[in-house]
Image (cartoon, rainbow, N blue to C red; front, side):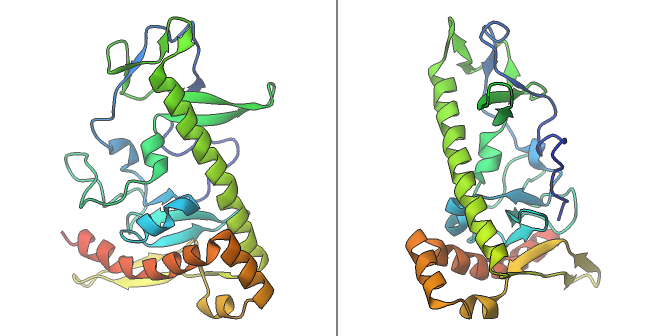
Length: 243
């Protein structure tokens, strides 16, 4: 697993994020990404709790170790290698596309001076140009595409708060344990995976009844089972690595 992003580092995939500007960007357009090569150099992609049921059908779900455990879909067995992106740059095997990928090249970032979040775009992205599918602005106002993008990013931000609440509760109740693993590949080679956490089934079964009922009301029990069931997806990654 890649280490959590330091506070002063750029978010994964983003090389030059900056706020949208109605003057500077009045003639710029954005197009749908033609490929997903921007996500090819990672083996884990952050997930929101709302994505657990869909992601569990395709990827092992783990938690990146750190002060705040971050749920992530494992997409590769080696650092900087996403097995789900083929030679043509497309997402392979009909796998679920995480929202973190779908959001790119946009992102909400904190503006400490204005004490609010602002919509930013990765200026280095190849989908940004003077000729494209969707204008960023129409006159002095954000285009309909930009407004819908802002709403999408805002919804993801709210889901992120719920995800943080869920991860914090798992940590506070000591349910997360390190799960370093060795994987023996059919060709005789061996991979050592580490740096990630998983939910301990025995500790989950030992939760006090009042905590279990509270988590059930919050919809968290299904998330835990989705995470536990996703462990069977490691075999998918092993098979893909041999193709």
